[in-house]
Amino acid sequence: MMRIALGLQYDGSPYSGWQTQVNRNTVQDELEKSISSFVGEQALDCPIHTITAGRTDTGVHALGQVVHFDTNVEREDFSWVRGVNSFLPPSIVVNWAKPVPEEFSARFSAYEREYIYALQAGPCRSPMSHARAGYLMLPPSQWLDIEGMIKAAQCLIGEHDFSSFRSSECQSKTPIKTIYSIEIISEQPWLYFRIRGNAFLHHMIRNVVGCFLQIGQGRQKAEWMSEVLAAKNRKIAAPTFMADGLYLAKITYPDEFAIPQPLLENSWLPTRVIGKPRQ
Image (tube, rainbow, N blue to C red; front, side, top):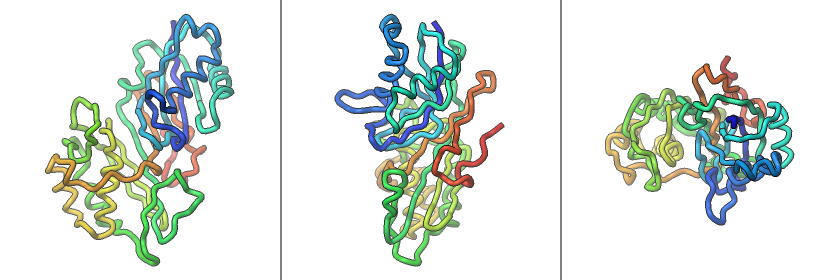
């Protein structure tokens, strides 16, 4: 038996999220079906079950998703890539594959996750970004208070109880998470949020973005974000913002596992936003 790790990119708009659900089309279903088709009858002795680094929600995309699975089938690394891709729909791609030690877990070995939220704001939505970016209607010649949002972000850095940004359906054992950095990039009519942390609660990024936009539109002051965080009450925060613009960008693991960096240059997001791959 051996353990294989895969690096994935996918357009989440056709799927009901990552995780298998009854009578729903999910990314996990498509991937496991494709791996099983590639290995053929040998999968009967060891059914394919994938473990993921991040269980993305309905409509959420991935640039650097990582999964692992156990198998009794041996193939060259690129044979896994080419073979599994031949059975996948166009909305999902395997970028790399490699054997990993049995102590590696795509989920539990990860110590950092990075998300990007892409937003278009203005009087008219672009049809070219449909399901690829969030949208906020703004009158002509009006823009968001970027400095106010940057100021508001500072209170979220560090280890906190993020209950105010937690979905009622969240299954995390604790609301306490650590955010390492938040970068807000303004390129009117586009706005990008890059958020790095050890882990995130269900809907946490979308709820944080919703609060930022309340501040950006002048409906709340920057200090309001501190009040929301301290309240530990989901009802105090802004409504959950749309999933369309959310991307799981990177998963970081200890160097000992030598997990490849995601192929971010394959993304339609600008270089300034996705950054350069870490060495």
